Structure formats: structure tokens, C-alpha cells
Amino acid sequence: MAAYIIANVQVTDPAVYEEYRRQVPAIIAAYGGRFLARGGQVEDLESGANPQRVVVLEFPDMARLKAFYHSPEYQPLIALRQRASRATLFAVGGV
Image (tube, rainbow, N blue to C red):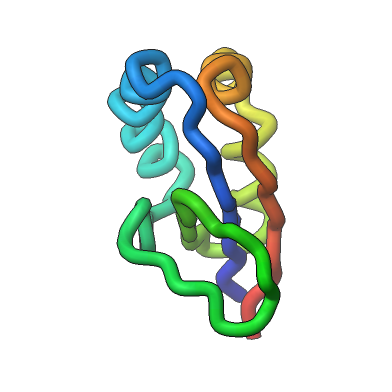
């Protein structure tokens, strides 16, 4: 069953975040993931929140999602992303 990472990202350092954006797609693909949404137009319908850059990633299953997130390849990129942004990430199982 597919699993998803849903992230709301507020970029605070665009130059550093661009380096993250450049490096992360290959790692996502190596773990079977793909982008479903990546920073397109966002409109809040009910929450009153202020969504910024919303990213949705799909993985074949939760095990592959977690393998990606905890992988040695991605760990340095987490630190890079955290230096360049504030984010909320969720892992969600599909139906």
C-alpha cells in the first residue's frame, strides 16, 4: 500500500534550500519515491493556516518511505533543509 510524506515548508534561506532541492530528487527516486506535488499553488480551504511550500511524496509503502527518511544518504540533507527552512512533515499510509 502506498505511503506519502506531506510537508509544509517555509523557506528561510533560498540559496541553501536550492542546494537541498538539487540533491534530494535522486535519493527519493533511489527509494522508489516520486513527487506528486512540489511547491505549486496552495490555497487554504478551511484551517486558517498559512501553508507555504507544500510537498507531497509517494513511496510504494511505509517501509520504503521510512528507509528513505532514515537513510544515510538523506540524513545530511535533513540538516541542510533544517538550516534553510522550517517545516512540518507527516508520513501517511494510503488506502
